[in-house]
Image (cartoon, rainbow, N blue to C red):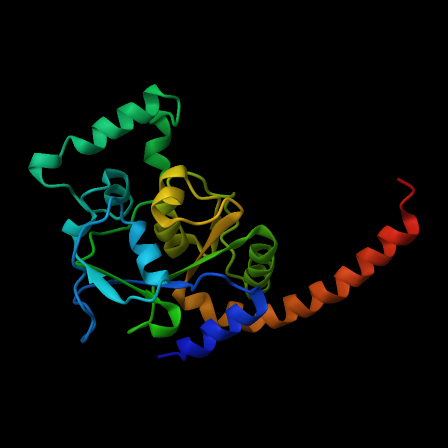
Length: 236
C-alpha cells in the first residue's frame, strides 16, 4: 500500500488545501478495524464532510437511502417502501427546471452495488482508495488538472455539474474529473462558495503527485513571466 500520509502532505503543501482530501473505498468487506458509521445523514455526500473532518468509517447501502439521487449514482436500489423516492425527486427537479428527464440516463453510475463504502481522510486510508476527493478553489484545481494531463489520466470530460456524487463513478470510469458541485452537496458538505471538486482515481494518485511538482514549478515561472508582460505591454 502507498504511503498515503506522505501523499496527503505533498498535495497539502503544493495546493495549500484547506480541507483534507477524502479517500473513498468501494469494497466488499470493510477493512479490518474500520468502525461502522452510526447515525444518519441526509445524503451520501455528507459522508465526505465527516471524513474530511478526520473520521474513518464504513457505510452499508442502507446508510445511503436518504438520498435517492446518490443511491442511484452508487447503484444502490432503494427498498420497496422507498422505491418511489427517486421518481418523485426527479419529477420535482424536472418541474422546477433543474434538469430534463432525458439527461438522467447520461448520469454516471457505479457498475455494481457496493457492499460497503469506506470514507477516510487520505492520510488515514485503511486500504488503497478507489477515488480520492479534493476540495479547492479553481486556481489550485487548475494545477491538479494540469498534473493529470501530464500523467495521462485526465478524463477530458467537461466540468461536471449536478449531481456532484456522479463524480465518483465518472472518475472510476474515465480518469480525473472536476465538478462545480451542486447546491445540495454544498449545503450538506459546507464547502465554500469559491470551492470546487476534483475526483481522482486512486490508481492515478501517485502519478499525479509526481507530475504536480513539475506543474507547480512551471506555474511559478509563468507567474513571473506573465506579470512582466502585463507590466510592459498593458496600456489600460
